[in-house]
Image 1 (cartoon, rainbow, N blue to C red):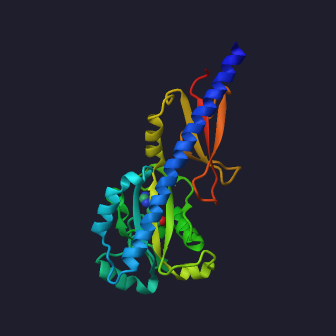
Image 2: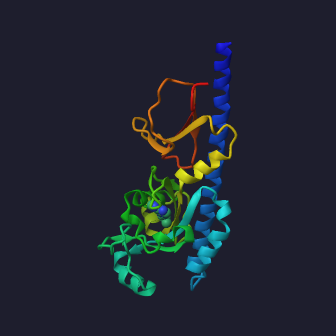
Image 3: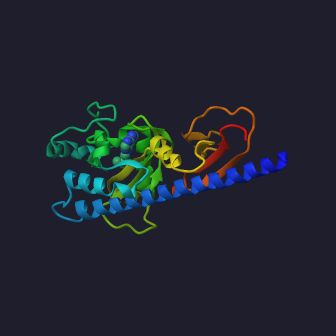
Length: 268
Ligand code: WA2
């Protein structure tokens, strides 16, 4: 009997964990797909029209009205690539100066990635050089070198919530899939991205599921197997061993690996 109860508990946790992993992965994938479409929107209306047929008001309106398409993103924005030689002209045209993510005037850099369009929910990054933050900068460099969607490791976003940033590159010209890195970098116009507010939006998602009370869910970035990074959930060490289940998650960036671990809150 005791054995049976344990088997039942283990089967239950497998089902509940797989349900949650599938749900999270699906909501992540639809959000990434929609950001991809926004990157194409910027390429089409900002760069392929002369003069640009896009401005902050239009971007803010469109992204607010389509936010239901990006259930796990707290907001999206477009950062333009600005080379140092073009900084003065850019700042004069915009009427503001490029600031760092610490809200100081940006010191001289080879290049910058100031946010020119933003969803209102993340309006606090407007005018900030996204290359001034380590995680954002690494994302920008990796996205433009690969032409693909990339994710940061989990870190504290400017909202102060734990999450990850998603970045898509926007190019000035159409590039073949096998384009060389230097050609990709040379053709880079800017970066369309958004913040996955994992801490609050995944909490919301899980709260809606049956069995939420009894289950402890953790998500880790396990890219470096020997140093798993918490992406969701608490890091508290476990007491007595209880049944647990691990599911692999695919968030679409082959450079990163993630998994979910589910346990019962108290021994069943
Ligand atoms: N967006 C919102 N909150 C953040 C953040 C971010 N990055 N970084 C830290 N907190 C415009 O990759 C380009 C968005 C960066 C895109």
